[in-house]
Image (cartoon, rainbow, N blue to C red; front, side, top):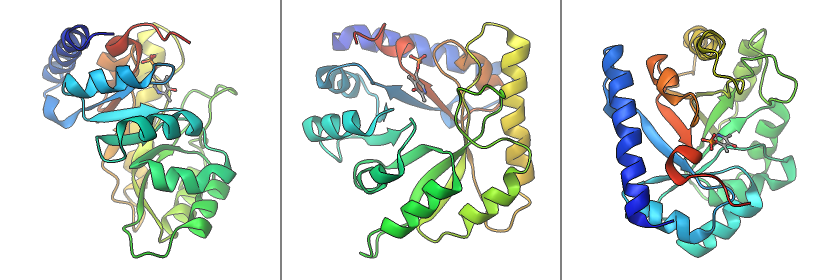
Length: 232
Ligand SMILES: *Cc1c(COP(=O)(O)O)cnc(C)c1O
């Protein structure tokens, strides 16, 4: 896809975010657009960067590895947004600037165990919450999550910057708002935990990001809306 094409899609996305933010009195500048480039070749990543995108998301470690190699580790902020197997934890620590999908205490403990002792800052993570109850979705159940969150907060190698969720694939606004509202509630109760100072709510994808912004999202993860249909 051409840079010009992506530029016009970005402009449209930013208009949508601004309008959604305005409807609820939010600052649209507080919403980071993460371009999820999974399934697209490195050329598309480069075109997105040329068009002004600064945050790139991938959902598989192998593909993240490929893209980082082609584009450069410090050419943008790299977001790992998909499920991570525990044995891939070391790659994520090297290749990503933030993980959106920390979905188990065991994975958190693996990060802690393999974290390099080179004086680097703790690794930024978002804790994924399953707000829809769908079996296919990863993340912690909202019920009882505070205990698990405490266990994660106790790990010095990780810095919990907030929460992430994936809403059900639906156009039903009520269902979407319920999922996003749920994440906000979990966030609010997490703020009572010592050591939790999360600020980010990663929620909203191509089909629901306007609603997510109205519901308080600070990071929208957009594939199709920015880049068109995925080729593979
Ligand atoms: C693919 C993906 C997205 C983007 O999906 P679109 O519907 O194309 O915007 C967002 N988040 C995650 C975790 C993804 O895997």
